[in-house]
Length: 221
Image 1 (tube, rainbow, N blue to C red):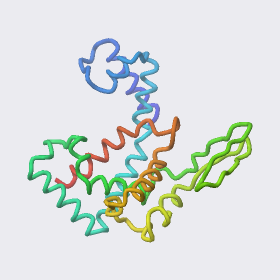
Image 2: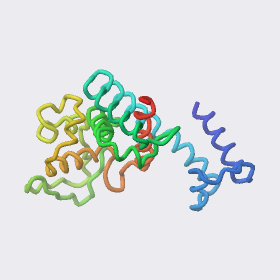
Image 3: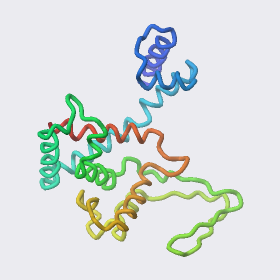
Image 4: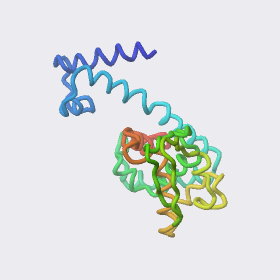
């Protein structure tokens, strides 16, 4: 399969570089405009296809599963979609990301789906510098010795009841609609870890969020 994908990517990229393709407003055109060579673009094209395929699919399937088994959440989301569609706030044939971002319950569903079933659950370990490092948690300074592998448990963090409430094991999008700004900020900071952090943050995050913003609306219309 990988060899087949490589051949397809090489063929399409070569057509673009030899001007056999007239498309000039897609991601490949953007990569070329930013200086990628033909060889680099073949590798980048494969990365775009493979890197987020399983994780995006996991997020979509898990969220749909929890929606289908939670009638209240399903009906609430459907009502919001119907309302926005009837008011002409959803483009046809495909909703725009800017339109989806204004749907509060949809955004809550997406966040809750990623929280309750993180697409990436490996430790994603990082190595501390040779001289060690010091950081602070709740006012307490902690020192990590040099060359220490540090990771985190996605399941544990995103179901932490101190952060997400006593019903953290439940799929409840309403938790993201709280008016408690301090609690919401804490939940949002924690949820950001799903995408990694700093220079290790997922490069495909904008594309993945675009997919999530569209798919749940489109399958409900």
